Image (cartoon, rainbow, N blue to C red; front, side, top):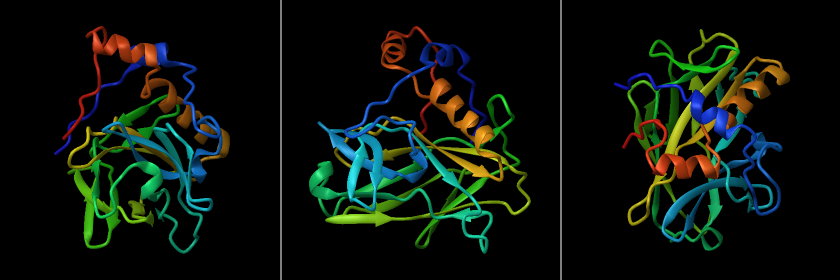
Length: 228
């Protein structure tokens, strides 16, 4: 069972204002429209914003994704966004290989000023016959084909209170270095301004700027423990 994650206030102060650069535009603009694009950067897996309408990696480096519950009123507590997609030839991955998407932490719940991690709440992610959740963890497998656009179902409990919910993940493949952890922030009934505040908090506190990464490499700051 997952333990609660430590907060990163020190990293957050150093990372405030971080800019994430993309091939066509920077992150922070319309992340909710992007699927999770996993790509090969010289043997290391990276995540970017995949636009399934144009079939391109519209943002090269992106670690915070947005999603909305309730867009389909028939399923107010479930969504099939974000998906995971890409064009194999463009992202440097072999057709027939498997991307493993791993749940890395328990579910984060927005308090209005920060995310906290509580075992009494969980999110379930279903893809085909496989189901994982943020309480016990697990891995979902996605097949890389010539042009893939795969969408798991993300669900919270029907008794969940309106708010923002945070899921932390990583991507792994045989023969590649595992990606840095990335994040999906889900909106369940918050007004847009309050929701975007929660997204900004994740960008500022959980995605360190390049200078912070150098400090972390020297042991200057405590880091969140990556889960295998």
